[in-house]
Length: 295
Ligand code: FAD
Image (spheres, helix red, strand yellow):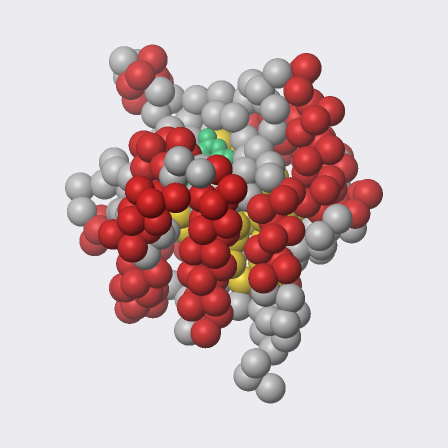
């Protein structure tokens, strides 16, 4: 099933993101965790891609396993900047053979090694090129990334918004945001992106922070703003793992409810291969999920 068809329904839904193992030795445990999350029957699940392609086989295997075994639609991520055109085309072919119809088209981060090389020698510079190639290669539903707090490589938000619009014009069917901890930043972004004429569905990304150690890494990876309300929670409960987990799940649930109440129907949860967290959030929303409140 194509993700755009899920997003077109008016029912409240959640999707979860998982990531592939970095080593063969942890493959089975990661598969088990992703299956437990799939058993909760989210609207769809996305599987990230290790830039450079090292774990690409696992991304596709996990995406195929979830969709075939649990009938949960999957979204396989694919990055391009540190890959050759041949390699990317081979991955696209493999996706077709595995029946993967939903692909998240990403540039990937620029590694220090890559930054030392001449960009004119790169096969891909931006995700737009990958979006276009996926659309030309087959009947894929293509997602792309967007950044309510502006991508760190951008000179300013106007420029970033222009490039997001280009990805949609190249064929992106929907956009998923970088994690946000303050919904107002997402609502602000929605206003600006709609104003420049981007009409595709935009899925907010929510990261439940369930242990204090995650905070630093999440900020480093995303650059996302942490509101004082959230910082207080980490300061107060961070040393008690059970309390921190409960508080982090409650905070994420509260964000999701606020998004639903303001007209967003699908929220993407960066569930980090944690079935207990995914289940707890679904339980918290058990009387909301699946319903259309505009009937
Ligand atoms: P682009 O759309 O290419 O944008 C990158 C920067 O270039 C932006 O500043 C943009 O404004 C600018 N830009 C775009 N087009 C042009 C142009 N034509 N000229 C000049 N500037 C331009 N990374 C992974 O490695 N694996 C994953 O699975 C993964 N999943 C992700 C999922 C989501 C929802 C998000 C938000 C990010 C994900 N990332 C992942 C991280 C992502 O790869 C990085 O944020 C990366 O730095 C940018 O990727 P992009 O696709 O947004 O790139």
